[in-house]
Image 1 (cartoon, rainbow, N blue to C red):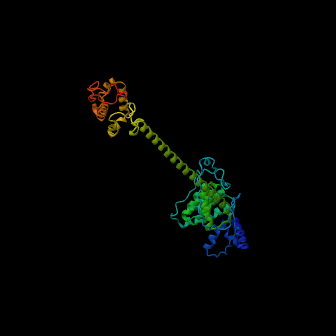
Image 2: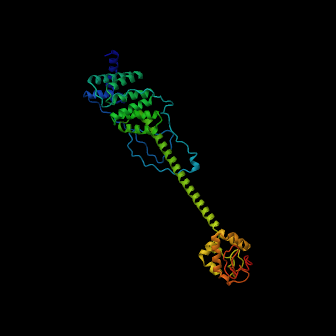
Image 3: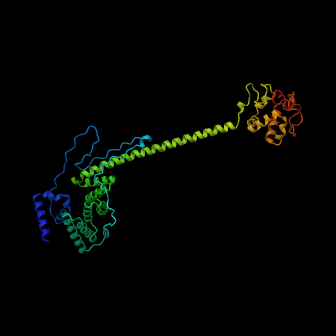
Length: 406
């Protein structure tokens, strides 16, 4: 073994002898795993009990979120439903205030993904397994010297030789995070979690990668999981930032959703009101075009509009009690024709061929009693064009009306 490596190893062992608790440092996970695999017994890890925060009577916003010193164990409180946002308020709804200090201003394009090996179920020879261990150790030494490029290369060699375990993926992810390459680190951390779903180290790396990418909700989820498995002071600050950012984003999303739902409800109510208004207008227009109904068929004193007389017209009771005749009389075409004939008897010839007009005149003649009216009336015989108008006065009793003298 190279003399320099032996000297470095001796220095590390001396430090561990002086302070055995250093063996539990997160950066020495690889060494701890190695010595325990040889049957060594590790000194107990000192408990990390942070002072409990004083009770807070009233929640007040703080400039920086508090840094948790103990693993999160509390059950998340139920979210309070967001109040509906008024339309004029929504336009000015500000984006959530976030602490973006963990995020990178620019991110590598990750155009050349690193090898991921043959898969977790690959068949590996003893020779390849030995090569993987040697490459991993060399990578750790290079990383300790600050040579990150060499460390990444060695960890890659280890992964290619033996891709079954999660350790080399985690070590390469850590080196990539130091190189500010979150996309590559995220991919390695996810590969490690596929091989070991309970790896705190993989959750830590992936959560930090998400934070560098500004994906606060995902970062909070992974870092919270990591801290629940193995609390680590070194990531407590970034974990607290991600938690606060995630909470602010989710709160803002609820407000936006409430505003959108409120707007949809208002739009639907407006559309329904407009539809009802149009329907009412159409109903009124149809009623106006149909002319006056039975109630409007009589004049102020019982006479028929445009037909003179003040209730003295013979047969008026018969006319008013005939629903079919009253319906016909409400037809604007019929009323126009009758008024024209009353004003000018010669106009009867023009309406002679209209069965609807002839039918009305026939029923009016019958209702008025045929020739019982006398007077000037519409004389016996046929009207111009041959329309039967009844005998001896036809629509008698209408002499006082504009039809008199026909």
